[in-house]
Length: 159
Image (tube, rainbow, N blue to C red):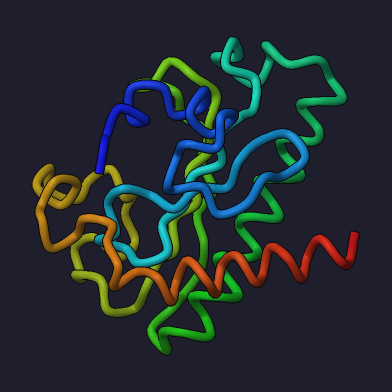
């Protein structure tokens, strides 16, 4: 598979060429994360490739982006809670320190995480957690993709 979409995640999503996209939302794209050391990790990408921070969006689009973040968070919570009895909660973050485009992280957290990390920010996980082949997104994550997508579809019908 061609990985060139990684160089322009938003542009490739807009073109329909980003394979991590789960659903198109009102102000962005719900995507499943490349690293799945916490199964169900997702990212909300803004659909405005020029936006680097939330304040770059007009107020109405900001509200839509935050509403999409809430919607994706709830979808991850429901799907992961159904698929893993060790599910605890979801953490939502808008950081922007590494990638120069507006995005939000949706992190499921689990009781089975290591004791020294379970109550800490995800960013304290060892660096190799992000790149280890055993944590790479792959076909074994298809049930998660389907479950999160189905929850997003259900939430759309409640809007």
